[in-house]
Amino acid sequence: MPPLRTGPDGLQAAIIDLDGTLVDTLGDFVVALNRTLADLALPAVDRAFVERTVGKGSEHLIARTLAHVGGAVARYEHAWGRYQHHYAAVNGEHAAVFPGAAEGLRRLADAGLRLACLTNKPQAFAQALLERKGLARYFAFVFGGDAFERKKPDPLPLIRTCAALGTVPGRTLMVGDSINDAQAARAAGCPVVLVTYGYNHGEPVGDADADGYVDRIDALMPAPDAC
Image (tube, rainbow, N blue to C red):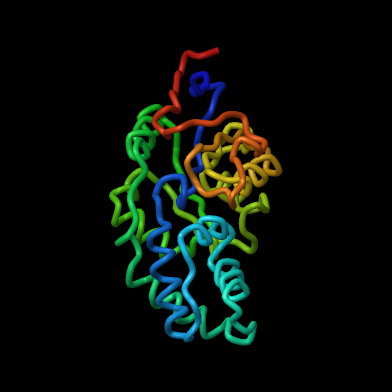
């Protein structure tokens, strides 16, 4: 894709998704979910199911997992509590920063963009993961799925994040990995770029309505003098 236009008339900030964009967290999800299911004497799930299901918040993940393995809806609260316990124990242990992610954040920050991480992962888990992986220092703000009244793909989290950054949506780039990020960005009025390697509910990410696609975040090339 062409260089990003920054500077007085270009982008002022970027909002970056976490799971599937910065960090490959599927291993953490699989371990935490299967420990939860074992506690409930329910069958395990595989990595492919988790990859299709993550992205809309932990509540959605737990509900879909219970439905998938035949767990009763009435067991949701118990499953939620056990999942929170297990995820806190493994957060980041089975996860890896995607190639080019840290370099890309550094490049965006060096270009003068203010950065915020916006994820549907619970806030405490997101902050702890970023710190464990050495990425927290790049962000002025970190907002989780429980930071606002609604989650992506609703535009509200992006609009509130822009307000925190002190920027308008039209000059705030959204970088994500799924149709959730694309839909939220479009509704909020933010330009959006999607990575090609993330978790998009089993669908080709190229089908999502975005302004561009990159194979690595460090392929985003800020160019203050670009026209």
